[in-house]
Each structure stands twice: as C-alpha cells, then as structure tokens.
Length: 99
Image (tube, rainbow, N blue to C red; front, top):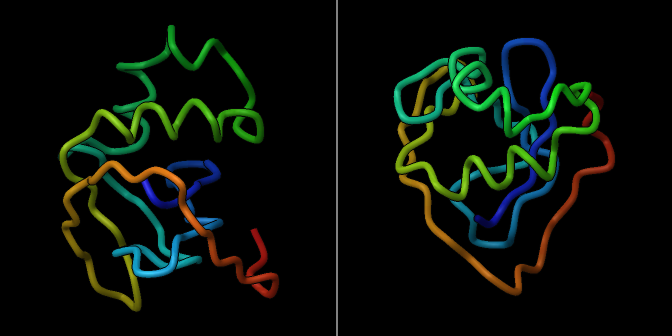
C-alpha cells in the first residue's frame, strides 16, 4: 500500500502518503472491508499481539495490505477506496498535522 497509518481510538489516521496516492496525510480511515476499525482489530487481535496503539503501525500496514476496500473520511465526506499494493514508494509527509 502507498500510505502509512497510526491508530488512535476508533480510527486509523494517514501519517504518510505517496505522491499520487488516493489517500492524503490527515485522512481518517473508519472502515476496512466494511468493518469498523474496532471490529477489524478484534478479528486480528492475535496478529496485533496486544501491542499498544502507538506500536501497531507496521501491523496495520499488513492488515490493510490484504484488505480489498477502505472507507475514508475526508472533508466531512466518506469515500470508498480500493486497496492497491505499491512498492518502492516515495512518501510525502505533512509536518503540520498533529495526532
């Protein structure tokens, strides 16, 4: 996938996104394959290994890599975005976004 996330409470937030990605830094992922982030976490609790939220980023990357669709909240709208695999990604970061 061509973005990175951090989990906070019930959502995933995009912290890095590749140039040309369908996602942007600051986007909020609210569903993975039509399941809430909490449901997705529960279904993957063994994989997430009880890690605290701030240490789950690399684990969520792998969960998202095998998903088909995510639902993103951006500018008050909900967007359904298909997941695509990407390699050798050149990320853009926004240092002004606070988590």
